[in-house]
Amino acid sequence: MALGRGLSSLIQPKQPAAGAAGEKMIPAATSEHRDTVFYLPVSQIQPNPLQPRKSFNDEALQDLATSIKENGVLQPIIVSRVQNSESAPRFQILTGERRWRASKIAGMKEVPALIRDIPTDQENLRLAVLENIQRENLNPIELAQAYRRLVDEYGMEQEDIGKKIGKSRQSVGNTMRLLTLPQPIQEDIKNEVLSENHARAILALPTDELRLKLWKEIKELKLSARHAEVAARKYKSTPSKSALTLDALTKDMVVKLEAHLGTKVTIEPGKHVSDGGKIVIKYFSNEDLRNIVKKITEK
Image 1 (cartoon, rainbow, N blue to C red):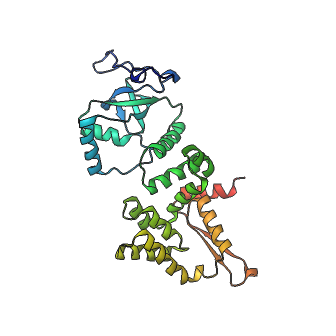
Image 2: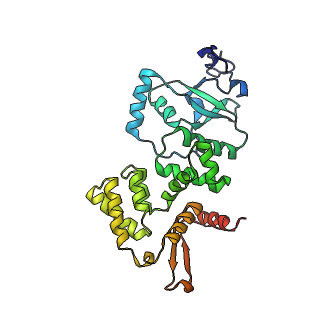
Image 3: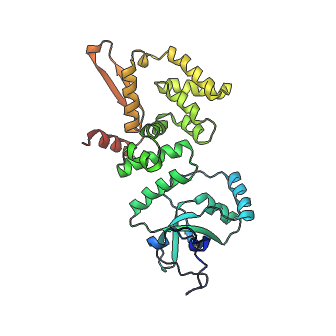
């Protein structure tokens, strides 16, 4: 876009009413209008049931609503177009649901938005996930679940996801490993009782038994992330029986398997090298099982 065109080239002037009262003529979101900000009626926008963000803090929403009353919505939301049975224009949120919810609380009639025309529901979900990863402040568990959806439902590799959002494959894989933690620990991370640095200290332990012990100690003693790392080393020095004979290479294999499969993996070696051992892969639903089998068997 050439410089000097001014803000008016980006912000669409309010359209004259056409047809039923309150309806506006919104042009198709062609490449010409891709960066145009439209002011859409709040009532004609609906949340996306497939978006990765699930929790919204009421107090934070009220604070944002107060800010919007004073300053307006400073960053446009992004929506895709849908049609209802009366063919009136309606829109589904790709990213910015917090701003939309806060605008409703603030009593706003319209909200600034960028429109993206999405050809299929599948593409809608993929873009919704990517847009939310890039633009919204997802908690670490929501982020891990978003990555997992991209891998499981769209066959994206961790490296591809990293390239899309400007992160390394290792960073994406490490975040996905949060989903291998026992559910109570995941809930505490989601609710910000534990930080992601606490989670890394817990993930350093090889079994759920040890991870839960460290989790309880962190909460009871209110350990900082740094002190949690120190405590983790204590648990490592007295490993459980199943982890006793794991060498560095085997531990690395566990990390790689967990990142690839997106679930908890345990390797139980035999008493002697010649005895081999077994790999235990944990799953939480039939859908999980199907996805794991697919990843193992696909070429």
